[in-house]
Image (tube, rainbow, N blue to C red; front, side, top):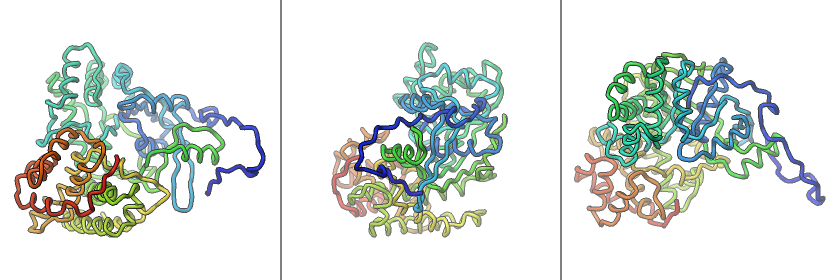
Length: 480
């Protein structure tokens, strides 16, 4: 539907009407019992995992207790509405609105005691994670980086037994220790972050943190906790004041926490659920034995293109994905990268059902949806981590096949240019990036490349390729 935010008779001064706040009495919805705990309460979780749970046929049996990350704001706002919020599906033809009721408890992530209580409860069967790629704190060897400053701090707090961990990993490990002490049995941890083989990533991060604190706890986790790998997909831009106003005008209630998303959604899962799970397949989720082809399709074609557009687009003066895709230079770069990625997806056994040409066409349509204001600055965050999954595997595969990998290398070059031009870089390695950018010429390229992949930094031909591609999109100053 189209929404007109102007009153019918703008010439008359009418008294303001106070609309009711969205809550469970306004939208009758009994609270389901908490059986899922989520870490990383944000817009994507609410448009994706919580939405799938709301759509499940047995949704009445599966309530979510969702914990925030760095700030309590989202929990405080949702608590005012009994956990209810509106998902706005924004298509070219108009908007549709769904009130989602699966979140039954919204909690400040700093409330580690409540997290431990919930994980110690036998009814809790699933933990889902959207904590961002950088939060897993893995080193180049795929294991927990025990020297990371926040990991060191959390391990000290865990060892002292007197304090609350600050990272999602530390908090989850402490809560799993409570579950072991309570004898509450096994459960599944479901990683929903954009990482290749993300179930293994979550396992290595959690057991790495646990093992550094208590080896017996790490052994118990290995024996009792299943780590499920997933591929998640739904474009979910930041909510704006205009979005809040649009919901109010269309729905007749006040919602302080609506989420805007594209109509498309996808969720592929692989792994065991020893204590049960919702019937997510009712909402279209797919369960497979081998998730790697689906992960790579999404990480390379969707996320890879997003990263390329984020850096190239901002260097070209664009603000959103749709604007960048309309730029012929950016579009050609995306198409070239997709050609490289497809060459390495199509040769994988068992990928006939990936329908890559159709997937590419669908992505062009999704990216071109100008009504979804997906901001490039949001996508550009944490580039040093994201490029390891989105550009590096394609570049390595292309080089191994005797090809240049220039399109994948161009993504890395664009990130390098962006890192030098951005007023403030939001990246877990921001200080190291800044140090590298103080170098010049080949030394700078090699130092930046080493932060993404040390092996590539040791390949003189790759360093020369990336250096030659720098400046492709210009060097216009950008703001994050």
